[in-house]
Every structure is written in C-alpha cells, then in structure tokens.
Length: 600
Picture 1 (cartoon, rainbow, N blue to C red):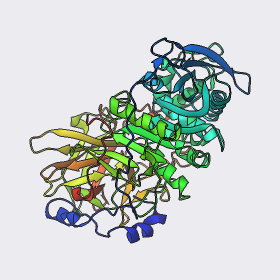
Picture 2: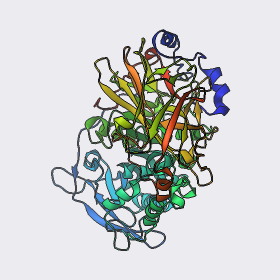
Picture 3: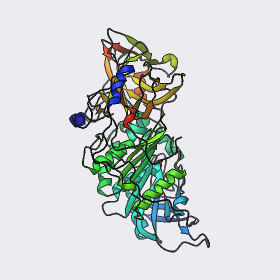
Picture 4: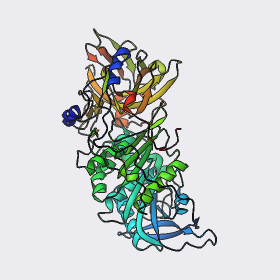
C-alpha cells in the first residue's frame, strides 16, 4: 500500500511483479520475496532478561485527590509494593505506573494487571477520568483536556507522590489504553513520563469506531452508559453528551470534522515522538476494530523518521524499536492479563523505567503480527509487508482475474441483510497458497433509485469442506464516496487497496438516481494464510450482516435518503466491479523466535 506520491519509491524498493489470481496465475507470486529492512538485525535481538518473580506484596488501595490547573480534583487510587513478611510498605523508592480509568478510580481495565506489576517493584496509580467516579469536572470524549489531566498526574506522581523515584509509565487496555496517547502528547519534552503501553487501542476514532464508512455508530453512547458519573457531571449536558446528540441527529460531529481530528491518535504522533515517549501497543484481529493499532504503528514510525504521517512503511525504510506493535488472534482485551502479555509489558517497563538491558528496543522488526491459519507469529518492519496485489472481477456469482466481456448486472435492495438479499461472488479454488497481508478494497459500480446508497462487503475464505471463515468487512455510505487519492494506498502497480474518504460535510455529494456511480469500500486489514484449494468469497449486501465488526446507526437524514433504494450492481461494460487484494507468497515470511501471545 502507498499513496500515489509514494508509488515510484515502492516500485524502486520492491519487486515489480503483479499477482494476477487463482490457479497457475498465482505461481508467479511464489517467485517474489518480501525484502527485509536494510541492514536488518534478526527479528529478535533480545538480551538475557527474564521476568522476575513476585518479590513484593500489594498494599490496600488508598485514594487521594489531586487538583488540576483549573481547580478540578481528580480521584487517584494508590497501591504500593509491600514487605510480604510484614505487610508494611516496602522500603525504598519505586517507579510509578498510571492508568486513567473512565469507570471509576479502580483498576477496572478489561484485565486488572496492576497487582502483577506492583509485585515486581512498581507503584500503581488508577485515576478516575474527569467527570467519572469521585473525580470532579465534566466528562468529554477523550481530547486535549484529558491529556492535560494526565500530564499533571504524571508530574504529581514524579514529584509529590511519597515513595516515587521520579520515573513514570502509563498502563492500560481499551479506554485506559487510548487515553495514554493523549497524555503522552501533552507532557512536553523532558517529562518524567518514560514509556507507555496502550493495549486494546485503535488509531482513528471516526474511521475506526464512531463512524463506519461515513455512517455514525452508537459506540460513544454505549461507553457513556457504563461510566459512573462524578459529583459535578451532568450526563445530559456534559461535553460528551453533545457528541452523542450530534451523532444521532446528523449534527457536525456526525462527520469527520475538526473535533474528530483532535481525537485522531495518528495526529498526536509528532508530539509523542518529540516528547521522547516510547510505546508498545497491542490489538487483536478480532477486536472491536480489528488491527486497530496498525495506524498507530505506522504514524509513530513515520513521525520518528520525519516521513508523511500516514504513508505506508515500505521495505528498506528505517524503523525504530521505540515504537512496537503486537496484533494477535484475539478479541477485545483477550489475553491481556495472561502470562505472556503481562511479561511483555513488564519487560517494556523494565527497559525504560528501570533501565535494564533487556534488548527489547534493539529490534529492527518492531511489528509483531499473528498469521492466521498458519498459526504463527511473524516479525516485520513494513506495513503492509508486500506491495503485490490481485484483482478479481465480479462475474455471474464468480470472482475472476479476467476482465469481463459484455455486460451483466445484479440487483440489491436497501433492506436488512439476509442471504436472500445478498450478492455472493466466489473464486475457483486457489492453485497455490497465498498470504492476505493488509487492507483490501471493493470497487463497485452501481446505479440506485434513491439519492443515497449503503453498501457493505464481507470477505470470506471457503475451505474445500465448505467451512466459511470471515476475514474482513467494510461499509460505505454512497454520498460519502469521494476518494482522497493522496491518503489512499495503492499496490506497486497502482491498484487501489486501501481507499481513504474525507467523510466531511463538504465532501458529501448526493447519488444521482439512475447514474452508474463508483463506490470504493475499504475492508479491514488482515494477515492470513490462504491454503491452496481454498476459495475467496465476497458477499455484498446493503445493510451490514449480523457479523459486521460494529453496528452502524444512520442519522434520520441518511435514513430518509436510503429508504426504498434498489441498486443495480454492474459487472461488465457499464462498470467492472472488482475486489482488490494484497497478496504475498507464504515463503516471504518466517516464524518469529518470540512468542508474542497465545494462538487463540
């Protein structure tokens, strides 16, 4: 993947053969290897560090109030290492770990891992996010104010907290993971903050979770219901309530406006890098937003080396071990409290806060991704790993690498997704195995009877025994079809594989009923071995299938323009609808020497 501006660079740095499809055509794929980063060290250059056993006990939590610059008091729960023989607070000074929790001042992460770290020599703090629990102020949906609160808590933990040695890290999963980015961007240079571990995190709130394909979701409202409100918060009028209301009624925040741009974690990376804060991130292929930390990884590496922020990372480009990402075969928060991931977070904190020679930061392959089906970990630097692509054109229920001759079309209605109201296209069995390694694109040419369209796509693999396994999905509101070529990613030969849409109020354009119109649907990223003999299947619906990764909630205006729509999907002279996939040969990847987490 790359933007058009990076096309020439990709061609010069990568092999220049395009993969054309199934059967014999895939044989050419096996002759091309992914080039490792220039001068790359082995995937694992780790030292002899081993996780220390539990040395300390864990104190009962005590709660204090810390006053922010605007007078608002934030409730903080403090837990200390103790002498296991006496139960008294352990002698000496310790580094401090902070988590910012919207569910109260407890350590109620999807995995409450504080005790594990306290037992190994860390003081653990859990603050209640402004407007929640016992904290004052009003709740907002992340943003700069929460970042400033976090930065002030870091300073307090370093300079005022009894027992602190002056060095601080951030810990947590989900909301408690995402908030770390805002704090790290706000602390400034030469801060006491030394490292962060944003687990179960995403990259771009609007594109990832609060809007899918230009259609708002109920995500923010769902989180709001779970937040215990603080003594000064009014859920009906706080800043977060404004976001919820505007998303529901089609207001400014139902679009990707300036509000969401300040909450796009990728945009924070230049500040985080300038502040010198290393980050180890984690997400799952089955997460709320699958592979949600990949955008963080790309933006952090690019910020560090002063490259375009959201451009793909290609072979031969340098990367740093200061910014690493793990993507496992997990759901949201799964395995975070397991032994492997707890030890990895401990190793990260020991590296940066205790200055132990772990070797963890020395790698030149800082992206650790689980290859589904192959059931193995792979270390790489580039994302996506391969520049190659395959294009499959829609036929009469088929997907083929041959451009269709003549004309053909299929009908689809705007209605709840069922298999009787779905279009299914399937390849012949693959003659050679291949690896699906990155995001994908579905380009649909269609007419509509209404001034808007809703198109959803689901990518599956079909085994010879008939087993169907979902790989990715995506959705697009037709009035938000405007494509940003400069932000979209393309394969080495210019094939669109990751379309980017502005999703702004000014970028929307009505669908002209009866006119053949192009729609580019972005499918989620993937890293999956496709065995020989499997078939690739695309299911096209209007409203998303029940298995869609997160539900959408169209605004009243959107619903009015969608109601009763009938779509004619073209697959011939009037428009060659197609599926564009990134594919690589299995031999391009080697198994990581490190176990980055459970295989299920």
